[in-house]
Length: 428
Image (cartoon, rainbow, N blue to C red):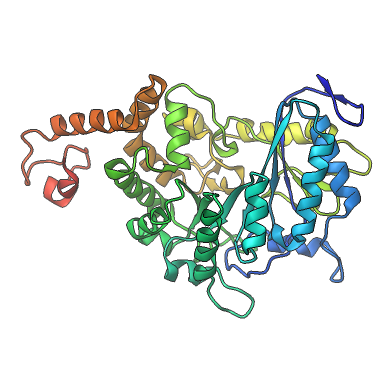
């Protein structure tokens, strides 16, 4: 408990996070796979997608007052949040400083396509210690395939320039890369391109979309391709990059497999603790469920805490666990997968039960490939081993595993193929 600068009591309770959309779905790009642009259908054509000072102040004040603290995370998303303008974010930071109780701190995370990030923007983000997530889809041809501006031009060069500009100002952005059907076909090229930026953090986001009649879109990654994509990148990361960069999914799985709790909602037993605040003050259950039926209320007449703890939101969050098909409940990987994101749980299980994740087969393939090594890495990290010590231990184990294996022998990875046709080129 504590007091804000307004004198209001700072409440505790189960933590929740808010992802704020200062301009709603507005964006200066027209990415072919964007899921959020369609939310504009819920507003009039002449609607002004802009968060007012009233909504901004109510959000900042409430979020601080209703957060257990003493460290608070503000997340700005879109659409493209930089379209709100630099003055908007300066105002937001000033409000945060005004409402923060003594001894508390907050940090801001901005997810952006980077197009508007000039030196003035970057200087501000650095001065106020923003974390920045930058969308960058691997190689130039793959990025430019879907991430185009409204004139139809690809945007890789501008996104790459934004990355370098952020780095020049002392910010190492987190690189967010989607995994489309095209990107999944070039795991090494995509990974090495992202690695070349030297930011230290990569997150992969699978694209799974359906048409209104339920068909899978051509840009969606298949389950098998996604599993192979992740497995190939894991092997590359293990061979050269432990301690140099982190891949979010690998870090999260090694943490869970070594006894930790999930930090990301798709791998948690339940969800519903990441609310969406739209520009007009409306609050929704989840970034992938912004629709009238998932509208929880409005900041003008309800508090964030009331909406986060409402029966509707609790039901939404518990449904992730309670609607699991039996195939998930009996799966060896339940404790790390938890059925994954409900957004994509729309196929039938092996016994015809609804609610299985579309990428299940690929995820299971990847978990089987990754479990032993990522579990070891997590355990060694908990023991305080340095990255170089971890790499040495893994290499020594690999050398033992390959001892006496010839080109025509079964590969020790367990694939059933001959070593020369499988992992021979990756042996230590």
